[in-house]
Image (cartoon, rainbow over all chains, first blue to last red; front, side, top):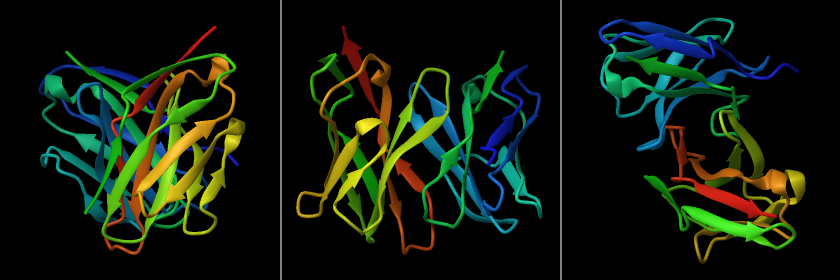
Length: 112
Length: 115
């Protein structure tokens, strides 16, 4: 089985721009979660999608949004980028809610 | 509510000696607990999981962890460290049974293995 695939792997954006990150979960997994990882804050939960519905959201501003498609693929969008949004964004998929999560390699976003 | 505390931010061992990475948790529900490993510039890999079956859990690469409810601990051990074990390790709790499923991560423990 193919693992979780995140694209692109690296991005450089300018302050004020917006960005869309993509995640393809493991086949058959319906739960997709997103995390932000920074040296200062560690790993922080962004949101979780299950069956195309956002089920849970972390403590992030409304500039961070996401969606899930009928094939369980997910995207997250960050609008009006700030320097502090520079981070590794990790996507994880799970077969069911509350079970172990399998992570992709991440997208390294740099905002300049 | 749930939280995880990894008691050491950095652990340094010599190759061939035992590894102990400590983790305490709190959870309002019966927890599922996990250990993940992250090598530099990589995603997270699941080492092992506890989901209310056996309290001693064996994982990949010779790692194991013991769930101790009375101590709210889930420490990760390995009898003999290998150079390839050098990485960052995360203890994670999931509130199974709660409606708001999410993984809560500890701050991580950086494991250094000296030759």
